[in-house]
Image: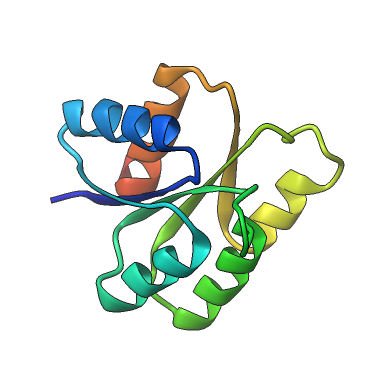
Length: 122
């Protein structure tokens, strides 16, 4: 099964993403902050991590840095309202992550997640 971990501190966003992804056949777990995400990633790494950049406490960038050290093979999609910030896509790419700007188009989200979950899809 294609497993996804959604990390966002907004319950509405977590629920929306979970609903959309489960309707497409993904198995979805959620976490509300960076620490909870890292605990789940260390215990049972998913295929894909959808990670909000602006989290309370530990932000998404710190989660991404710590994930690099875990060597889980998890593909990362950063979700942000700040995608136009200079260098964000470049910094994300340095960590092997993709970026999708909020508010996101559902078809674009599903396309990126599908490619991350199944790299052979291209």
